[in-house]
Amino acid sequence: MTIDLVITLFVIGFAGSFISGLVGIGGSIIKYPMLLYIPPALGFVAYTAHEVSGISAVQVFFATLAAVWTLRKDKVIHYQLVLCMGSAIIVGSLLGGYGGKYLSAEAIHIVYAILATIAVILMFLPKKRVDERENTKVIFHKPTAVLSALIVGGASGIVGAAGAFILVPIMLIILKIPTRVAIASSLAITFLSSIGSAIGKWMAGDILLWPSLIMVIASMMAAPLGAKVSKRLGTRILQTILALLILATTIKIWADILIFP
Image (spheres, rainbow, N blue to C red):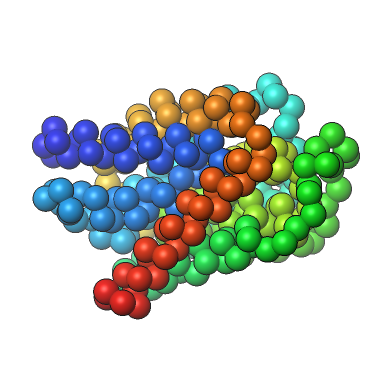
């Protein structure tokens, strides 16, 4: 592994993890396409979809761990919600993480694109202002929370993601969770999801040691910075950033699948 490749991987990990802490996502929705396209575009090794999903699974584990540790004293994490959805998502992500070894690279891309498309649709649906409920007691429908977490965990585990990029819209639109509570709680839930994904990818033999280690180091530095910056921004700004990032990635992935296979 050359020093240029090391720097490239570090920059990818840092940029994606900063966004992870900023908008409450595990970062895979950004780093998945970055790892696929940037290294070969610069003349470096081209990682397979299975390798990228394995690297992402390990990186997301440490990125979400660092971000949750940063937010632990802010009292915005809803622990009952985390327990309810986290217990379901870790099961789904473990099954999806291991089961991904039986899918082709194109199938993994399609699963990723479907997840991202659903997230975009949810983020742009008309909704009431949940920010008005920021300081009220959070009440949610537990069966819906468990079922959605199980499904998201299974699908996101396939691509090595933790599922926050679709969990956040589900929590905002369907479960009616206040924005800041949703973002903080999603980090804790995706941390649990990343445990299942990482174990599943390790069992499947999809994890590359050195690229994963570089991404982890970058994540531990960048994710806490993103989490701190998020506390200084308005919730509407955070939602807009998240929606635009998901939309851009979705367009790119579908274009590669349907137009430039």
